[in-house]
Length: 283
Image 1 (tube, rainbow, N blue to C red):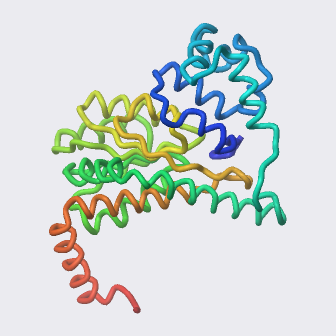
Image 2: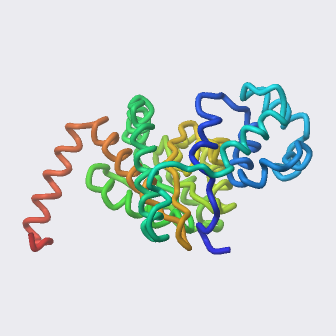
């Protein structure tokens, strides 16, 4: 399987967990159900437990935490949500049109999430105050980290992209913390490289506050991040579409600008002056 080539569930399955405070074990179960929604709706509690790597009683307690009498009731609800019956225009047209319409739906979902501006503002304040600001993105997430960092460098004095794994990654995290970094922005996207979570553990051990842009509110990143910002990844083509996560990255950058407007304006003016002097752009 290629990077980013995993199937995601309908938004309706994710809605089961919204507003419910889950333990780390329950988040593992939720993530398992999200990734295997159609199949899980026909599995027993024991089979779901094995798939998620937890105990069978944990699956039962998870179902009760969601407001069901037990796992059979949750399974019936999953069957209702995954049995088809999708409405709207998402099923119209050819597969390319459906993929684009699915991305539009992902952006609309993100727009609804952004009704709570406090979480975005909190992320902006944490990241704006971190000097330097390390930005982590490995494998499929590396281009998003670079995209964010390119623009962030215009308003932040020291942005450090961490897009290579291996032993040097830990060195660079420790160097950032020793230089005064207080927070880390991490892009955590499917298929979830193992090295990403090792880096998140190292970041927490180094005293960094982790802000994660990830694909789901029950992503494995929730175990490591103090602040999780979800944006759905599109899965209708051979490789994942990152339209919503990329949009969210720019929203977070806006929040960084809003957290320090005077510094932002000063740095932008200095860049424009330098760009004009060097004739960087044609227009």
